[in-house]
Length: 143
Image 1 (cartoon, rainbow, N blue to C red):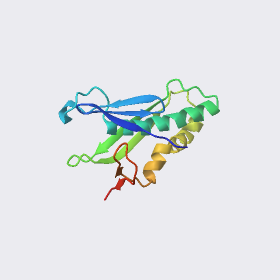
Image 2 (cartoon, one colour):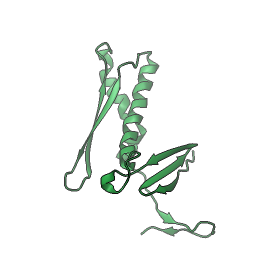
Image 3 (cartoon, rainbow, N blue to C red):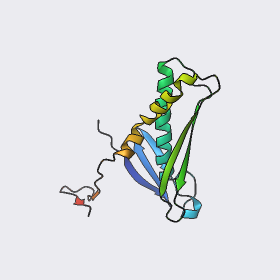
Image 4 (cartoon, rainbow, N blue to C red):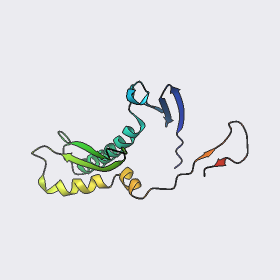
């Protein structure tokens, strides 16, 4: 399955990604020179982790005809105060009181199947290159 994402500059600190017929807008916080009109790219990355886990939780419930009413996922983050580096992620699946307790551990297991989480745990290599638009030839590879 090939997936191409094309990224363009939307002005000032706005960066847009076109993927699968959708446009995903990002911007930087005003403290970082942006207008704050869209989530920052790193915020979208963190959101992709939570929403990916969410689809696995929903799938688990749907496969068992368990209502998803009242279920929500809450994700908290720990950052290094000096470097801003992400140190840890805590994901909590909150269920209503009537949710069957026998499935609590299974919900945790389902959320851990998230493809974004698994990719973070075993990241693929990422190559970066430069190619001049409209010209053939080999791209310039990163150092």
